[in-house]
Image 1 (cartoon, one colour):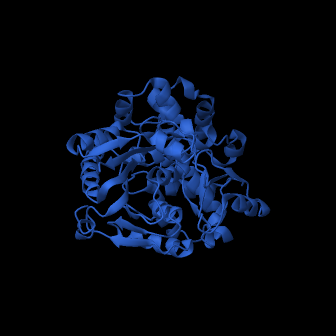
Image 2 (cartoon, rainbow, N blue to C red):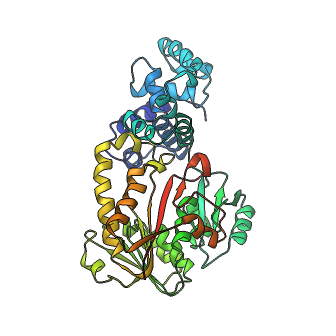
Image 3 (spheres, rainbow, N blue to C red):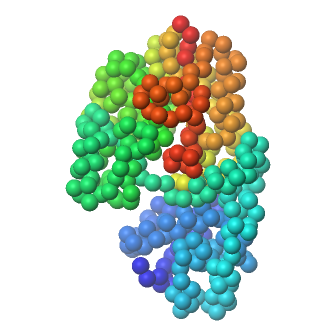
Length: 418
């Protein structure tokens, strides 16, 4: 695509709309595209990729430019991270901008402060420094600056992985089996999979490989009673339903009607008849209390900082803060405690977040175990080995993009003593 002044103007306008970061970047971009309906598909793709790229490399571009205006940040990003040739830009930028960009192109990223190289704000650097060496912080930061791959989960109720891979190849879509999940496929590109017959027919869903592994930790049996406590749009609940061969019963709880509404078309496509979405007011809703001590398996994919998903949502590191993390910690502890009352003796609960902060993960679990002595901690690596998944991260499941190629995930498996 040949860059024009109009491209620069529209991308600058989009970045200006996003940068206050009062709302999620993807939501702001959706509104921007709605307000500019004449933009073509290629224009929208350029704008979205550029805005998200700048959010991934915001620290560098802000420090590289003399004045951090949206246009200056945009030009710096295009030159430094998109490899745009200065000759291509010269006709559409001012002489002053061209001189500045030549200096930015020559800058060495390795000469910058660790926080700039890792692209972590100060508050997050402080937290990470408490439990990570500098080399690991840098490896984590650099991995989170890369766009996430597109992972699919095969709906085993309707298809198997080999057949799906063959159908994708037939249509010119290159994919390979995921390293850990037995039902995952990683695509080498990002085609419009939501228009493909496999997706429309419910045979595949988009789901990160790390998220798929949570289902294998929970390992529900065919006739179990299962609760997905914070179901969202239901990706993990759909996977659990397929693992149960559409038998037993799954309750998908969430306190957001719009999220549960997003589950409805997915549920229809899936062919499942054992999944029941349930809108709740909070973790103490009467619908939850009615199921106390009746449930075999509970999944708590808790609301969290989302820092493990920065490849997809780079704005989160700029929108979260120590205060918001503290608020989330209180919510996580309350949700875990409430969800634990659902279990039968011998039942299993998996607590998970897409965060790499111990205060949202190990510390929440340790506090829960200290205050709920009727629970024991299971070994996640052993549980995965039982499912023939060769992944050993110790007692807890701890996934990182730089080590496992997945989103950052944490999980702990707990069992109520008989």
